[in-house]
Image (cartoon, rainbow over all chains, first blue to last red; front, side, top):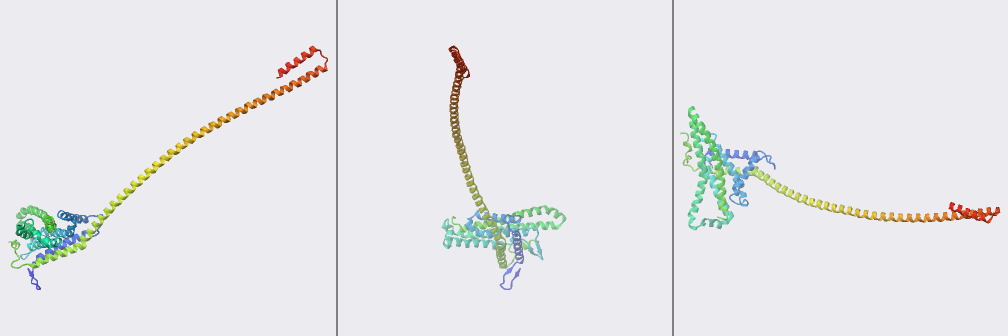
Length: 232
Length: 173
């Protein structure tokens, strides 16, 4: 923990570092694979275009492309950023003097809740922008006015579940990996016992990381379309 | 234990607003950078390709229509040429028929004319021959008369002579 002297904000430097690492990795992957763009795509360009089309498909399954096109960049960036973040903690965690330094940034609730809250706030912003304050407010009284309290709770529940789902999945994966690594490091016998489960769990974590990234983006688009579209 | 630090809320009594802020800043900066350097160009290229495909499809459609048009044109031209050829052949046939008729008529006329000419010639020749014989007969008669006058012949002899002469003339004729 480190407090900046100017505003008195507390930083978890490990989080900051891992966020920057994830961002740099994502940027490098995207930057390098979009050099030499050609009309006839090859290699990494194909992969990037596949990701774009994938996110495009997610958005299209939730709303009109006319409305949803502006969330394309957000969606792709979210997907890649969360996926890379989920992957970062898989190969190893680094603990220095009892402080955890190298881990998935998404294994921290602060980070995931920040992302989730950002998404929810964005959805409210676009909801007001799209429908006007009146239409936005009227949505809270649909389908029945007496459900209004539930609607309010829903907003907070959405935020919490969106953020904590991601956090919980990744955090749990890292704890189990940590336990297995501890077992593997304990003795030769422990290593032989832990080898296969570690491998299996790492593979499964890759799967979970990908799925969680997809779910996060999917829910992002669901929430935004829920707030912006007329027919609900 | 090695996971003490992983406990939820391990940040202790502080609200780590710094993390929240840095998460936001990192993510937004990343998004903007990627938009500028990666997604923007990539989307541009994909859009370009889409446009290219659209225009290619349009071009293909156009050329297809054009070739269809040309094919139709060619087809009608061929048809026209065929009709024309037929016409020409027909005309030639008719012309040939006419020529044949003409030639036959001419030949017939010529033959008739030649026949007439021959008949005329024959008649002429015959007349000529008859007149020649007559002259001969006259000459012989004169010869006979001279002989009669030169010799003092009897009436019997004279008659005999004349008969002889006439007979000779008949032989000559």
